[in-house]
Image (cartoon, helix red, strand yellow):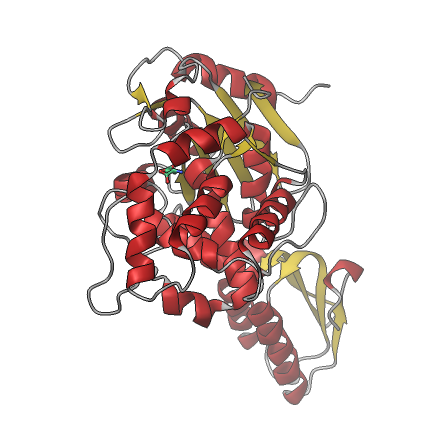
Length: 400
Ligand code: GLU
């Protein structure tokens, strides 16, 4: 059997491909030369395989999609407090290249607008790095997210620097305000090199899947960033990732995402998948027009909205019966707070002194920290009630 996923992806491209709405970005001369008809999609699972359709081998520059990954590297290298000191986490409601800082703190509002991304770039790597070393650290870090060595598209880099007047103004602004202490021109060059990395949709899907997977790259197996870094980055993507259309995007697609002016979009659905989409024509917000259509369609078809309510926690009880005086409680699926609370309510109904209890966890797939602690406390209290409790724990859970 051949998996139907690539056929499904091709069908989505066929359905969404006809539109010619929008226009290719032209403020960077080299981007204006892009073939507007290119169209590609890739979906990376958290177990490694990546499915794709369309122009999946065509490379384009990552542009603003580099911002969440540089943010993740800065968090990893400098810690949350240091990064928050220099860059906030509030949506700006302004254009991506707006010349604005938070009035009270003087910080850029968030790391997804250019001024915030320029400051964030300055925080990648150890504090003592030279600009060249920091460029290398950025390249290495983004390559670890992609599970392959990425390269700068030098033609796009040179073209963007020729017209980078606004970004240079932002660099001077944050240098003038003392938010960064270094040469602003070299800093903007470093940021622009970061934006000029060439990727394809499969790279984007794997990079997004690494965030969706709590920081572990599903292709290489490398822990690129810690789980808290991935969570912080996804949260900022959810609130600030899609330029001025962040609210519209989050309600209709419901996947933490980031887009770039070359026409790429990533989406990262925690615990499920990473998406990469490419189509160069942009809508009035600067997001890939057909890319947004494709993501809406995928989210709808595949039930990917993060705010969709998950299955009820009552399904955690697979079996509850009394056999020869022994209460058997067999659980299944994931044990998080709501599931564990349900189990505790079932345990509460077991009469004190009514005989032994068997808690069978063989079919439990996952236990988070609070779920595990609640279940352990339930067992302890059953024992205090005079029950002899036997717990069957499968090896993959590793809890006693
Ligand atoms: N390098 C581009 C810039 O700073 C990125 C913009 C984007 O993709 O939104 O203008």
